[in-house]
Amino acid sequence: MDMKSKKRVNSMRKGSSFEKEICKQLSLWFSHDEREDLFYRTAGSGARSTSRAKRGKTTANSAGDIGYLDASGKPLMEAITFELKCGYNNTDTTSLIDTAPGRKRPQLLEFIEQAVDSAKNAQSKYWAVIHKRNGKQALIHFPMSMWQQIQELVVNRGNLQITYVSADVHEIVSMPFATFLKIVPPELFGATK
Image 1 (cartoon, rainbow, N blue to C red):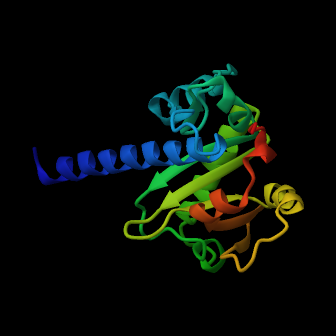
Image 2: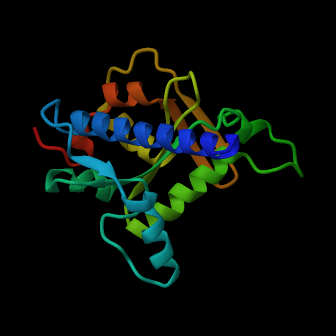
Image 3: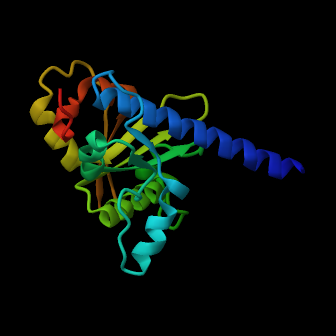
């Protein structure tokens, strides 16, 4: 196996383990630490759903990178379609603001647009991109409209690391994924106690 092929295989493994870890964290959050198996990676990371959507067909529980394995996880998937990205070390929220006109579009914006399209295919209310650069903590990016709904229920937020960005037609909120799991009540998206 040549060096380029080894890098691709290692990158795929890293992405796969990242996706599994995010599914586990979401499961624990949504089930109040009772289950770690509510969510799992969709087949082909949503590729089948995307392909069928181009032909005007829907595919249940297949849009985005995460689907539910247990019916108790269905409300979250109906509320939010998730896209997961690992690596892409040159991708950050500041690129949404400081990219000069005429330059290549920021990669994060491409991830967001992919998530927006996946959410439309899934007919979910919101989209979210969870992105982790190598050696950094995972961030979650989602629409301002979702943050407005969250703010109504989250009274004591303390000092949060939150970034608000307006990029093209998207108003985005970004924060560490761990913070999201800590401050956002899963009942907001249909979890039961």
